[in-house]
Length: 203
Image 1: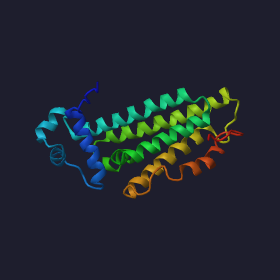
Image 2: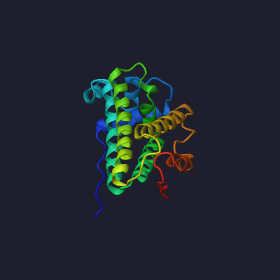
Image 3: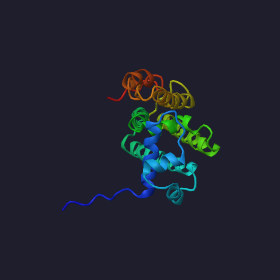
Image 4: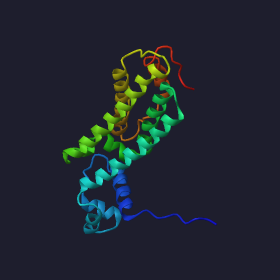
C-alpha cells in the first residue's frame, strides 16, 4: 500500500518560496509583499508564521546548518582517515550550494546587505564551525594516523574553508553559471598533497 506524501506545512512553503525568490530574483531586494504573492497568501498570513523577514532568513540558515552538519557527522562516521573526511566534507558543501542556488546567496552573504547584523553573524559562525571541523580532522590525523601536516592544521583548515567560500562567491556572481563542483576533482589532487605528508588521495 502506497503511503500518502505529507504536503509541506505553510511555514515550509514560505521558506521554499523565499529560497526560490532568492534564486530567481538575483540581485533584487525581496519584500514581504512580493513573497506573499509568491506563496499566494496575504502579508498578514506570512506574519502569523514569521514575525519578520529576518526570522524567515534565520529559518533558511537553520535549514542549511542542519542539512550540512548532520551529513558531516555521517561522513565522520563513515570515513576514519583525515583526507577522505576533508574531501567528502568539501564536496558535500560545494554540491549543496550548487543544488540550492538561492541558499548560495545566503551563504555568500550578499542578500543580507542591509538586514540585521545577527544574520550576517549566523553565516559567519557557520563558516567558522566548518573551518573548526576541518582543523579538528587535520589535527587528529597526526594522532590517529601518525601523519604530520604539510602545513599547520590551522592553515590547512583555512585553505579548505576559503576554497568553499570562494567557489560559492563565483557561483553567485556568475548568476549560477560557474558551478562550484567544476574542477573540484582536479583541484583536490593538488590541494590534498599540501595537507598531510605522504597521504594518499582518495579515489
